Length: 65
Image (cartoon, rainbow, N blue to C red):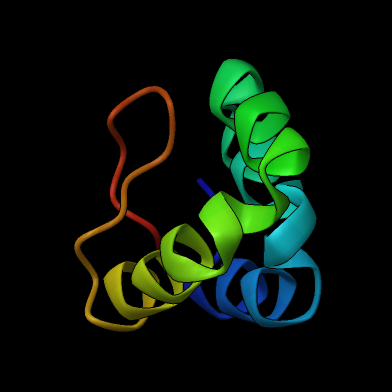
């Protein structure tokens, strides 16, 4: 199980380069996010909102703790 708090901190600090997606097990999406600089900032903000509201799951479909 991945921690919601850890994921949120990683996303805020390193989300623009996709580290949050790598942490959650989404390697392909992490690479795309890295190449596009967090979807030009938009994807990065959306991920922060999804994690903070509890809508984000890890690659195995598990809820964040």
